Image 1 (tube, rainbow, N blue to C red):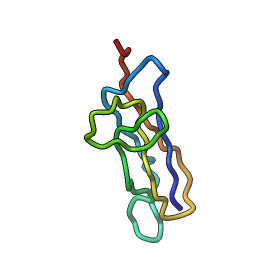
Image 2 (image 1 turned 90 degrees about the vertical axis):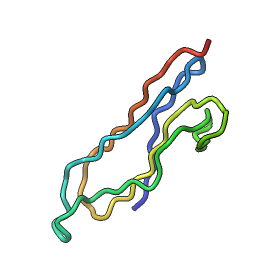
Image 3 (image 1 turned 120 degrees about the vertical axis):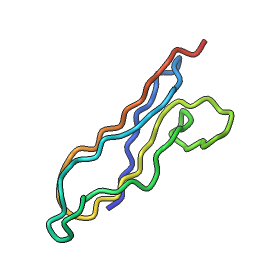
Image 4 (image 1 turned 135 degrees about the vertical axis):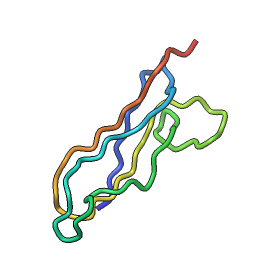
Length: 84
């Protein structure tokens, strides 16, 4: 199961950096973690990835793949600054 979560800024803010925390829940079938990240990086105000472009980053989406039905909470973080 794939899911995308994001931390977004207010209209007058920009992202300096971002990141995520994965649950520590293990997968009983494989002995490994039940989550993997397939995308993480800066995005525009619409949540679309911008990569290394000169566009002002306004959010940080994270794409997660869950390998099992094991639950947990993925947290997405951003450090923000005023646009000025």
